[in-house]
Image (spheres, rainbow over the protein chains, first blue to last red):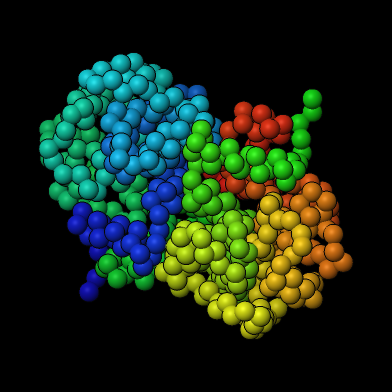
Length: 244
Length: 244
């Protein structure tokens, strides 16, 4: 049997569940720290400090779930790497204390977290294409199911309207895409970079050929990957990302 | 006022407390993940796969507290980096569920965790100098206060007896040393490498000049370091360690 190049949203959910289940015992803060770190490392590869102006901002849009949490962690590491992240986190998880702590950590690092007034488009003022290095799209991940709820429909439309003006770095899944089928709306985002966490999802086969595609989230052993029918990646040295 | 090069055990405890307090909101799993990762990265710097046989084992000795936890995390990352860690964790924290999860994670990665029978010296069989790349000393950290309790007195004596035969990589503080005063017993360990987490402790000034000294634990902003009177380190790129 040949090994899978991508795993479905269903299988990805099973992998995730087992990693955080009683047997393996990873905690959400651990996996999120490593995932967010890997996204930040991918940003440094795509936008190396020597070749771009890192005074420009990295506009991180965090969604309501774990993908958003990865974005919050990514923003903190980007700040440590000398970048200038700005975070927009419009729909904050109230049920999970840890997400509040991730925001506190950003405050500690003086990373601006924009106010989240319902329906406001003030955030667009912070997204001047001339002053923005890239957008980190951490809105939806592998558990996304349509329809897109507000305010994210509006947000994705606005990002679509910026097409070509600011590069988009998507975390795990380009937001708004169907995880298994790829872009399903006319206004689908077109990321310049995708970081597939653990293993790519089927939607990644619909990336345009000029997209930089990375594997990130280096936290599983080979046997575990093989059990689920895919091959883990041969990361180099202590790298947390691998360009595919 | 000139900035501190080292911070006392008392100040280190205050820094730690603030990082995990309600204001900043770091969780133990986050900080431990980053600290353990940095120790593993330092091991790869000191023992690069190209120049040493990484088939040899890295013998990680984990103490009962947070320093031990850093060691457990380090072992997992070393395995991911292609090394061959073996963990000895003789006195396991029962009060903290997270430490059990760290052990489960090691089992998941098939990292051997030696049995912890009281008073047994079977662990020495796994510490053959010919087959051991280095020892990671994650026994005691900055909150260590003498006297040394068993079984760690015996363990430190055994490690001392191996003097010069296997390099020792100490996490934050060479175990058995007084955090503020340095080596206080005749049989003090002599590490070949020290990774000072966040900021060096006063004992680090007693290292022999041929010790490789790294800063690790890259998780604080400059202003926070300055508030406590020290300067954070200028890590390069996405590095989690900096050779001092």
